[in-house]
Amino acid sequence: MIFTKTKLPGAFIIDLEEKPDHRGFFARTFCAQEFADHGLKPTVAQCNLSFNHKKGTLRGMHYQILPAAETKLIRCTQGAIYDVIVDMRPESPTYLSHIGVELSAENRRALYVPEMFAHGYQALTDGAEVVYQVGEFYTPGYERGLRYDDPLLEISWPLSATEMSDKDRNWPLLESILIGV
Image (cartoon, rainbow, N blue to C red; front, side):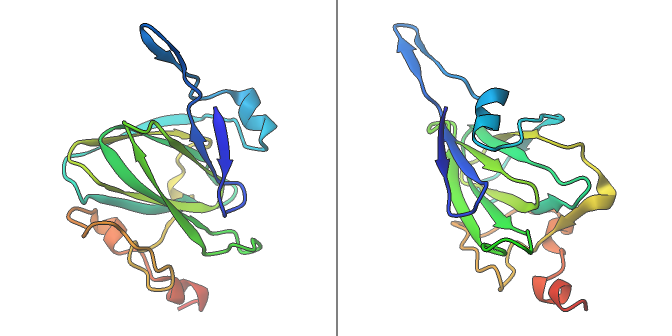
């Protein structure tokens, strides 16, 4: 695997290191030792699959707080998505900063999401399928979220949002969270 640091400390883009032969190629997509060597949490508590019928579907922005904070390894296995993470660690020099990365079945790229990062994505194709390896069990009482269109974040989504859950559409704005409204 090829680990590339992003501007957000602890977040990595992970590309495959393909070993080609006449049949195709072989590549490792996860190795606990390699993750630990890069300072990443190598725990996998759950694996989740998300399927999106329509291009423009938006999911997120989700995260869990301590003591149930999650790491995630996100990979698009069919179609393409635009994946966004937001640093929610108040002590971080990149607090409330975000990055966006295109993940697709074609580029086979993955994104490692550290604990206390909000995560969401938009389907760039019909039939986009996403696999998540998650480092902590889903714990509803510790779940939090951000609005995909929060003006404080200034996330530029590539498409208009065509499908979204009511829960995702109605997360509170950061301003109300930060000032305790």
